[in-house]
Amino acid sequence: QVQLVESGGGLVQTGGSLRLSCTASGTIFSIDAMAWYRQAPGKQRELVARCFSERRTNYADSVKGRFTISRDSTDRAVFLQMNSLGPEDTAVYYCNVDSYVVTSNSGALRYVSSWGQGIQVTVSS
Image 1 (cartoon, rainbow, N blue to C red):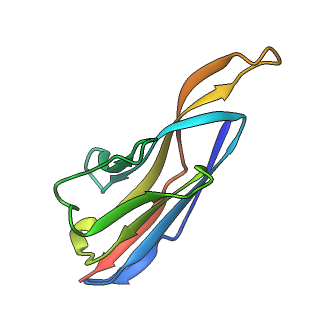
Image 2 (image 1 turned 90 degrees about the horizontal axis):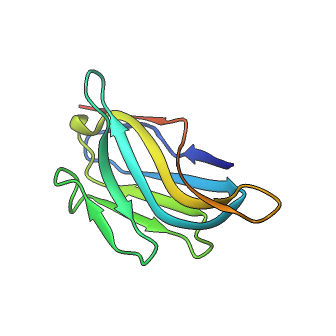
């Protein structure tokens, strides 16, 4: 019911920047929170940044001051601007969207949490 497409990952040197994008589509009625998570090899998935519908944001302590999350005016895309990248930022990054979706012809809504397929970010030292 919700499809998420991520882009913008890749290989960058220490100190460099990348901008991740995630676009949501499907039978979406409204989107609540949009977030980015990451999972490094051998580690648990962790929250990187989250942006709520009222544009309130929160960040993991490890990325504060370096990463910026934003949503576009259509409220169907979320971005993660990553600056001053270091090897510790190497991970697979996942887009996560919490939304109300239309589930039937009656217009009934259901709250769902959807995940993108993940995109690799590698920072070389």
